[in-house]
Image (cartoon, rainbow, N blue to C red; front, side):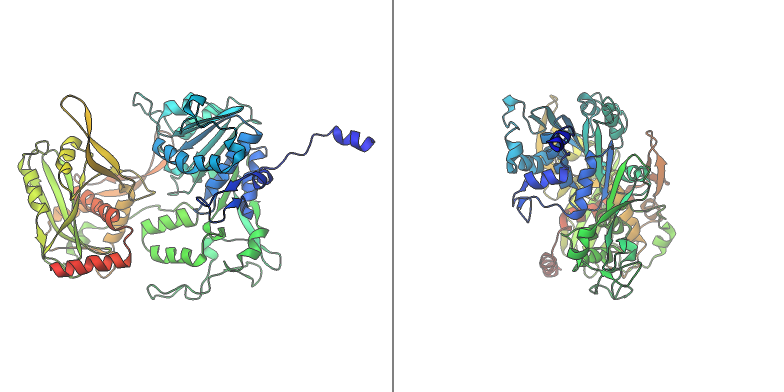
Length: 589
């Protein structure tokens, strides 16, 4: 009797989020290869439970395919049911927020009765794609571009996904830049006491020195997942420690064999085949235990959904190419890529490089021809490039003078003539036109020409090409109407780095860029007219930025845009489709 009375004086033990999720969350076959009740991967347990410890910030710097988005959804589910309040989910853009709501949030609500019963679907009940009400609180999804939305509804729980893809500064409705969106929204949650507020930041990183998730992770207690070998020694599976039998082989396309990670204390070999033994032993160890921010880093080698052979293949395919190495480090290793400097090629070396074909001549192996045009006020500059799969051959370069604002001007007539030209019997398959300058004229020109791909450049490092958006034209009456064309955003920062890497390759390389004879010194000077620098932004953060070192850069812009156009058209081509394209080209020659 006394024991019962004594026990009643103590509050019941708090249920951990991981147990609650295991008991209450269900997955459908639409989003999971193993539908049914949720089963967390061993390393996910602490990543979820730490959000109920005495931390106001939690950082996830991870590779892809480790389940970080699912952890965010689990935090959301637990908080809505157990600790309802206002919740903000911040994503890089409002369009991504809408897409996420449809693809992820709606299925989470639909598949889990515990959420479905308390979340109204009808707009009259306060629901919309970006705003959900539930007893005791609400959830709103916002994009990082608009400062007005960031500041309008402060909430104690803040979930920020893919922070390295967010803009450097948010704009107000009047168009003014108001500063880093993360700092703006963090200021709003300080109204709540520490015991009631929580911010969770997640992202795959980008470039070291300018990566937002790297900056926050370095401020955290820096937890790394260690796993135990048969003899009880704990190891962190760090990329530099991996081995395979033919690691130092110089034979291209050789299959990696017997991939393993050796224990640092004994001869035990961690492999993906014995992962079922060592993964359950995972233990997170802090590098800076005194930090008041919880931070987690994990790579894809821990993921049960990824084979080690596929990861090594990615590395072998990317080795020696800055941009591909960066993607591997960011998405597979979950580490920022160190790019202290990128030495630009010397224009003299490119000018003197052996020329294997004449201007206008079609080299052997070329199966498709692409053009790219840069629009200036008084001229159009166009590069013509032949492609042998990933290898580029610059065939010709045209400068067409005239008033680019007038579609009847000679420069546009010349461009039409170029579009109908053939090189060795092969016509131009497609041409990109930069639509950032003189957008209305470019839109009108593109509208009736199926070969034209309007593009615009973005200062982005995470992807070379982004989903296209519909183009519109403003009429004389001031109304906007659709052209039927789409404009493709290109990550030109990444594309320029890729191009500089290719320019340094020997002509024999499968990804080299070769040049026809007869191009001027001016062309080669423009081709290397920018250098990569690390600069401090107005917000005090560091940023990798391309800076002009020569008065003109049209040759660089057109060739990097051509590389982007190649990615749009052939980025997902299979061997079968390449063979078909090559057979067609051979018949035309």
